Image (cartoon, rainbow, N blue to C red):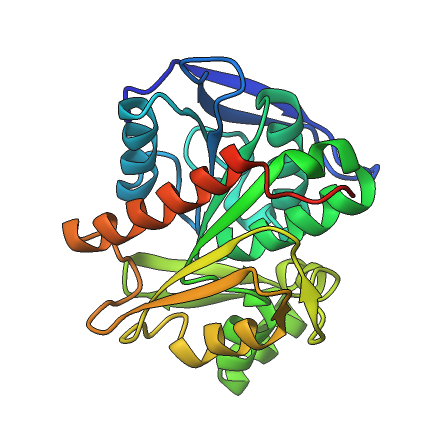
Length: 276
């Protein structure tokens, strides 16, 4: 574990009546001084707050007097629930609840892989439903952002037999380069279609700094370049690591990540977030 703050739990209820209450595990370390920005970490698919990058981000925050918040989605890590029952909508609700109820002051949201998709959805949700909290989201740092992951990277990448299993049986097992095969459920795919980012121009209104490996087989560079084509307003920047793969957790990758975090924190200090 990170050693950064004691594990605490937050109960999250979704708007859908049938969704169970989830007990979400998180670690939160306040900033050294009031008003100092915090770092808010969003993990990837089947990852958790004990991962290499989550641990590194929390440690970086401590060294620089920044706040830090890391948590586990339901069905991940120390949080309640089964992974197979999770959906993008549920994990987004959990991210929103932890952001609103645990963090204070300006926040730099850092999302890795699926966490990059949820980071963009979180910004959209906060600006639409909770504008006061939306103003606190000062910048985004995205690592290989798997935007529209369930449709573009999972469903379209599945073979016909696996798609048939999802539709007819409700689940298909997908091989993984990072461990045991994992379940892709019909509810994950169907709910994901309700949480797609529209393929049209979007002005985030705050810095969006993206770190992407050119050799990433899971979130290809072309997928991130397409996202860059929709981010308008001059706030977005893409940093490509020529020999980088998906995890981007080597010391040299983390050094590049810290540089982007530094820039995002500087923007948070300057208050470069327009009124909602």
